[in-house]
Length: 105
Image 1 (cartoon, rainbow, N blue to C red):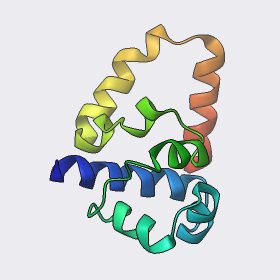
Image 2: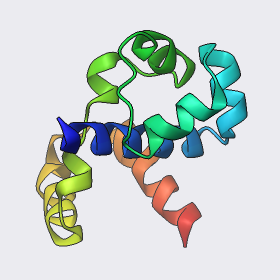
Image 3: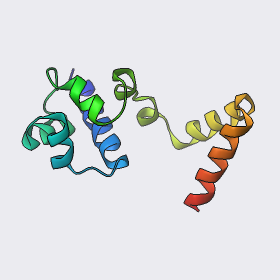
Image 4: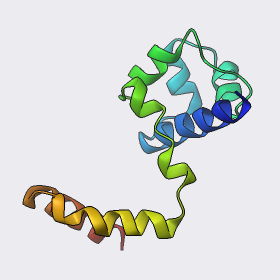
């Protein structure tokens, strides 16, 4: 259970940062205390009662909130996965990925 708490905390922090939210902002939206959110992000607490609200505030589904695969994957494995799956994408999706990568360089 300890490892799940750590991964979930990391994932929540990752999604919060992606949305540009502070801990206080996310705590306010999810209607929880900022200290509680901090403990969740550090992997000390598991947000049993507020899980739905946190996912909703982060604009993800519960399965997406528990998507830890990229956390455990090496950079090499992620690159390999991307390359292997490019052929299955539609033209529009390839354009989006191209623009995303281009904007990061």
